[in-house]
Amino acid sequence: MEQEISFERIPTHIYSDSDLASKSVAKEIADLIRQNNQAGKPSILGLATGSSPKKVYQELIRIHREEGLSFKNVITFNLDEYHPMEPDSIQSYVRFMKEQLFDHIDIPVTNYHLPDGTLPLEKIPEFCRDYEAKIERLGGFDYYLLGIGRNGHIGFNEPGSTINSKTRLMTLDIATKIDASPDFGGLQKVPKKAITLGIDSIMKSKKIVLLAWGEHKAASVAKAVEGTVTSDIPASYLQLHPNASFILDETAASMLTRIKTPWVVDSVKWDRNMIKKAVTHLSLTLQKPVLKLTSKDYNEHGLSELLSLYGQAYEINIEVFNYLQHTITGWPGGKPNADDTHRPERAFPAKKKVLIFSPHPDDDIISMGGTFQRLHDQGHEVHVAYQTTGNIAVADDEALRFAEFVVDFNEKFESPNAKANRIYKEAIKFLKNKPDSEVDISAVREIKGLIRKGEAKNTCRFVGIKKEHAHFLEMPFYETGTIRKKPIGEEDINIVMDLIEEIQPHQIYAAGDLADPHGTHKVCLDAIMEAVTRLKHREYMKSCWVWLYKGAWAEWDIDQIEMAVPMSPDQVFKKRMGIFKHQSQKDGVVFQGDDSREFWQRAEERNRATASIYNALGLAEYEAMEAFVRWKF
Image (cartoon, rainbow, N blue to C red; front, side):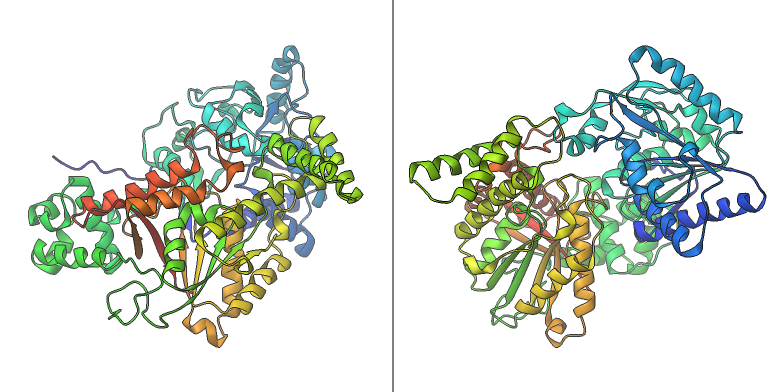
């Protein structure tokens, strides 16, 4: 059967990371504003909210402050706003835009416009007509900056929206509500509706730029860029625009044909990584073990060029099979007194100092619990660094239960600690009267942080780690009380550097889960990478290897994996027991979304799936596997 090939139907630009991409987009906007300022014309911009444009706004602020770019002649209209929503609410897009951009530039208050989330229902249709009329009177948008939802929406134009849809009140899709749930402290608290600019107005823009960062956007990006134009993926309408483009980072582009199967599109450089990618893809597509692939399979699936380099399938198959076999090890710290030529880790030193960075207080056990346990059992000196308190992921009723316990404890044993009683009673009073989504007071955040710290300590005891080897960094960027964090700062980087300097590890493990480039995992990884980069000149860093693990929801692609640590059924069960130590994250998790599985279930299914892929490729069958990629700084 002839292979169906998809090609990009809209200009798409891929950057190595969102920082570079955001700076490029900001420069383009700044150039437009300067050009119009010189011509004495206003610049009419359409703006989006969410994580995608944040760094664009940061760069525009920098250009304003350092290069003198004036926004006095800029007029903006935002895409959307939740309804109902007060403008000073922490989830409000009015507040978001003021905090992220407007309050830091010289744009007049009368020049920026956003949908009004406070309007009564009967007044919304008239407001929407007036909103569109203002845009039309100004001649439409010079430039519209968009993001894309996991379901392919633009603005809150959810799947099913037509290309001629007008500005209106829209019922939110379940996928959109799930993505918004962290901002609101749970799915049930997300508004059911939102006011959104219609696709018709967006499509009339002179230029449209859509931003997408992170692997969780990859599927919707691929459908919008390479698929057919359909209301099921509203972003696909941009294929019909004469001057629209997608700006992506590498992870958001990962499902495009030229990235996923580049040999189908053009000639490629057949290095080790590309060969491994192509052959594993072929094997899994045909559901045939690597060693059973034939020359006919290669020729019929776009790999004749690779076949011509080797002459026969057998030689390629053996080479890739060995690549895969050499990633598997039961000795993540290196096997002592063994030939390590084809092992993922070094044999020397036999006893290594290991530093595991955990963004939240449970990522260590969830994501690499089997490897964590094995490193300890095999005699390595294992340290765990919990980078943040994880306090926002503790439910209010859980904090209330602990606060009441302390008060009852003090009363029962006639404790003289009046200050503790006062603090906890203050927290209890706040929690009992707390409005939905209000930021926790500091006492409540401390209580929630202590709950998670205690659970992390309990996990370390369970694994066998000494209490002095558990390090609680409490990085400042995280401590805002909301899902929106501060940018990473020097203090965050220095905290990580100081710990690395203190331990001088031979191995560092870090969360490489980049699904949300503005989420906690990404910021924590940025801090580690910056710290390691600054310290790489140190003598001990010459023998330090950095291994990246993924989170609870995803795994490295099989061709990326450089170390796979197998687990027996007993080891899988023990890892589950370790995850259970985090009681506040069981059952009713604050940010559970629509996935009803608990974290132990997600982790086990992910680890079993990795083992199943290895087995499908023709390697030994294991109960489960944890996978890692080495960052060669």
